[in-house]
Amino acid sequence: MPEVLKAPLVVEFPFTRSLGPVQSAFLTGLRERVVLGVRTSDGRTLVPPVEYDPVTAEELRDLVEVAPTGTVTTWAWNHAPRRGQPLDRPFAWVLVRLDGAGTALLHALDASGPDAVRTGMRVRIRWAAERSGAITDIACFETYDGDPVEPGGHDGEFEDAVTGIVVPARPGSTTSTRPVAPSPPTSAPCPNAGPWASAAPRAERCTSRPEAPAPPAVSPRPSRSRRDPAARSRPSAS
Image (cartoon, rainbow, N blue to C red; front, side, top):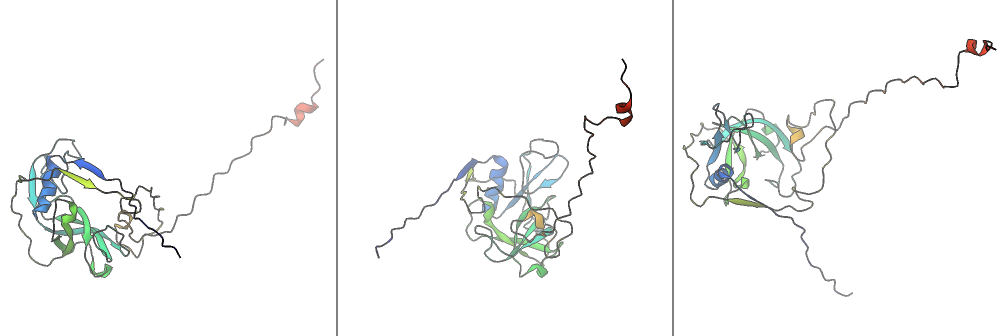
């Protein structure tokens, strides 16, 4: 048989964006194993940080370091990880409120199974061996039974700061351009998933649907040709 020639073809649409002072400091901090949040005028610390207060729309610039340890606020078990996700084995998607933060950070928790995960458990960051200034500099979270770790008090000023990011988007990957249909509503809590299952990709979800309500009864409108029988028997005026 003749030899079949093959050539790999990768369809990719890389998305490049520049970073403002808040996101630049946050990603540069991850590269340096420092987690930064931003403080609002009412004293809240938002992690990940945002450039504008989601309540007042006020511009935010007061960066503050938080601890690499925290508490799981909610979770969902991912039994079939997809390509490009943090771990290549089953893991838990978790929302973690880091010590010193007022909001929670989404990431993966390396756990042996769903029985090893619970709301309120203590965890800490497992840093990636190679870091470049991206959210993937946090490899995942892991369980932690030690004392709380005090943050170092970093002010968010770095040399050689990260100023932009490039996100590759490929069809069929986790950044696919294919639209995703919304999940059906559930009529009962799912016994096989955590309380945050509807928000985590590929998490176990219930597929039961509530019964649709019966349509309201509609009476047929009378035909225009129908008239009162008494009117038909009434003699016409001459």
